[in-house]
Length: 453
Ligand SMILES: Cc1ncc(COP(=O)(O)O)c(C=O)c1O
Image (tube, rainbow, N blue to C red):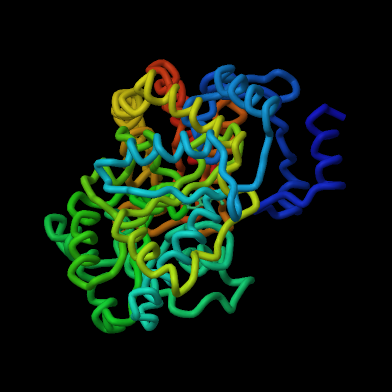
């Protein structure tokens, strides 16, 4: 029995793994990653893999950064944690909030509310929206417009805003008042419009939804600047800018879920900056610490916070997680931001992202690749059964999954997403030669699997 078999057996015996089918794990086994360095990770047999997905889209500064380890160590020696509820605070969380408000000046963010994960950051955003409109004397503005194929986490609020039926079905009924506008996928289109009008047509469909519900019943629009888990959907230029206009015209708040796009991923520090949009609320996690320690954050504009401040006699914001403002997590985030800024990893994401995208576009030579798109170090290779009709493969064929398993055998990790998209989101310290290696392995993996179809 190999060491990986032993690990799989023990894991199956004791652990209930997230988002996994036990039967699948029994068939294909598990891989235990034991260490990492830069963009590479190593399994128990010391086999090397190039991590073309920064695990779950988040190890932005790469693995093995001693600077973060030492910052965590120093903070834990002093104070690992203390409550920030009701009369207490701590310096790392103040330093981090100040730093984030400074970084987010172009986006107009004024206050930071900390939590422990992306799902919690989203829950915080949704609760802010509810209370904001109550404080404004408009409690009927409780509806939230999300989009098809959105992913906003696993808690009931974020899940209610998630437009992926498989993530919702077993947990229904979810929260009332969540509506789904078309996804602005430029390839698998839900809105019929010529290319030059596609962005405005998608935003127009969303605005139409607000109008038919009645703008006086809608509190917020929530969007990922790039829809991640739904298929790495990069919106057409002009779409997010138009959503800002739609939100303002209809007196609705605009939430950007930047859990994936935050901290350099798009080649700019934030997705909002990449598309030049100022949202009212932004949610972060993942890249804020590059995953070294869990942390979530929700940022709000001054007008949003002022509404709470001016109406506090109606009630405080009765929300907070035990780990809100966790000093060790904040110390990790500060060290992580030092690296991101000092090494200009957003700039590297832009430069190497171009190279990776050019390479991935070469995969269009395979008949089963229908579309390739990317921004910064986020990439999508869309598989199709039929290029002409853009029909996808039958899910039972698990084509994307097979390609990703073949690529892993060849030493590259990326993610197959539902709907046959191959997703790429490597650490932002990726080098040019690593980008080239990703492309050549994916090329071979697609060729190998395509030959069996
Ligand atoms: C866009 C987006 N929002 C929210 C979340 C939830 O974050 P977490 O898994 O940290 O709860 C994720 C996680 O992948 C995400 O991609």
